[in-house]
Image 1 (cartoon, rainbow, N blue to C red):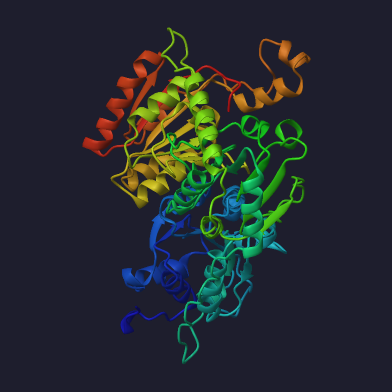
Image 2 (cartoon, rainbow, N blue to C red):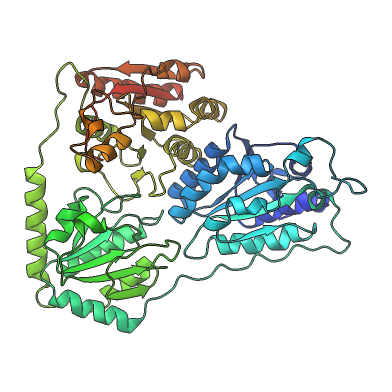
Length: 564
């Protein structure tokens, strides 16, 4: 509620008030010379009438923090950067957010439109050099909505429209370009804030399509659900677990982005798409953009395939040729609840017993990782040890780091993995965003050594110290871009590159001392070379976080692996 003494007077102030009216708590900002009307507005408006501004010394960190904040709260936040150059740095984060339908309100200044005669016009050389014919083209291909502000009063109405579109399914980032003149200009006499428009309600499924799906389940011997993400509240997880139990469905989470089921759910086959689809005669793809790799683990011929989601065909992807016998446009939870309204068929109990037996057999056959010898530890052991320190509320952000099959995951939304867009440097700042949302929760970022460098770690450690966000950063250090090495080995298994002692363009040696980078921001940091030493190091890390409220970095020597 705006107070009379601090009602917005300019376009910049109207923008801030509109963001707050739309439920945005934080403005992650990397400021530039286009920010004075925003900074003045933040100083003049009361704290309750504008988002809390947070200084973020790199744009990719700001985008990922907003991303991570949404994953653990379901509340979208705003990011503002400096004209075209700041937006260019933020683009990767926008691509990542769009890839996983993460709502983020992206803002950037735009160099002043005028050279003279208007307040807010050009005053520095860079305001000439930074102008583009179409600044929005940097992000237009991946955003839901864009607009360049023209008049100060639009900072209220257009902002609220953009926020409504941002959170309407399928969610995603929106963008507004902000020339300095309308931000600086006074609002017209008689200005009154517009009401916040309601977002579009989730789409209910077609009853006939759900009835057809129920019929196909009844005809199936081994129906399998493929899923790779849920919702921040865990409603998808609860509904899916219930459906699997009632109907005798198996569940697999290939290429997981946000884990959906707990590791001990009796329906969870695991994370391998080939094992999941090899025996399936019905595959239900639940809001999953990449359920399998068509060339190597597509379902068998004759298998029925159903796609369910707000956009089951993922229209943003130009090439996506998966088999599709039935596409149901629906909110995933509403689709699962509609399915539960149908009485299960007589064979459901037999299917359930078969699924449970298959799941139990797979789990018993999995070898338990061990600490190994004196050399680099295995990624399996690292993942298991990290799992052991995660309590009922802990979350982990994994970027080419954790191996989910070797973890005991206690529930939905405990492990967030890099999105399929693959913009690296995401996990560490995303963990900072999650820690900002829940300051007492244990938040872990487990990243490859290359990913750590992509994260702009100096900026991230500075943010952690400045905002008192004691995350645990774990570096999976194998001194290479292992994902690139794996790709070469798979593409040219008998090639010349594989026969060389070092595959070109994969080595990161000599590596810097990552512990010193963290210690520059007063972090507790250790290097761990032996797997047997990891459990104690992790316990020390948690103790420092709990008692000193200080960020921790562990740099682990980990053997390169062909497993993701």
